[in-house]
Length: 338
View 1 (tube, one colour):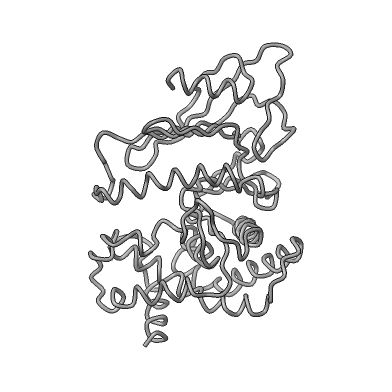
View 2 (spheres, one colour):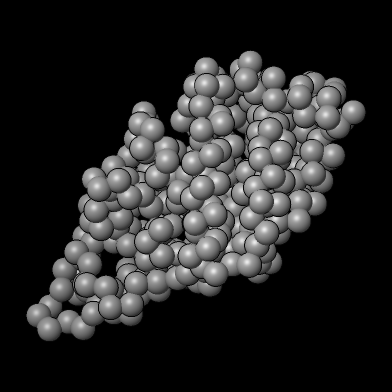
């Protein structure tokens, strides 16, 4: 970090010195990195105010997300375009807006990291965040149990309940990183003529649903952090915005289950999600006709799955998520549209 960002971190946390201890990951296409930073304090240092975590104890460390626009695009799949760059730039602006305005509303039922500082400086974005590992959410999983999946679906249900029927401000008007309007290049590459022709109708079915909320927009398994007691927290809010909650649910399930598992467990997982959603809406006093919401969203589950499948077919035709279950749902949706 340069001195400007070092000073921001020290001021935000009340620390006297810091040490970059670990690069957690490099950001997609060379847009920066996420770093774990250790902090040192002088005796008697005051505890700083923290967005979303007032009264939190002085942190021993933080996680810093340092974004800077690369001198050249190095997209892993070759999508090096001006449109791609503009989308990424906006995604970091959206993430900053989410932490600035909305993250404080996410309680323990849809836990997100507390935010110490946000800064945009020239072609760089700088975020100083709570270290979720230190907060007890140190688990990262690539294989999950039924309990793990239910915990993540519960997180999504509470997040969707919190922002039900609200209009996103300074976020993506329509959330998810694969939204049709932001992905014309991938649509142009799509070889499936029937799916390409239906792309607009699929998008409209999702956007015209009377029950809209905020969607995480990239709710894959890798963006959930697990605690030993079964709780989960979520990170990476670059593509949060308006939409039907089924987009998150379908995308999450696709990220952690095989083709056969998707087929086998679809009904049970949707039952789990809607049970949590009903409870979450009631707990927040949201006046929603739940039977109507559930019926509408259940019918849109295959539509949401097909919407992501449409993107994958154009973006990465050999992707492992392109399988018979996805094909079956897509054909079912296309028949309904016709």
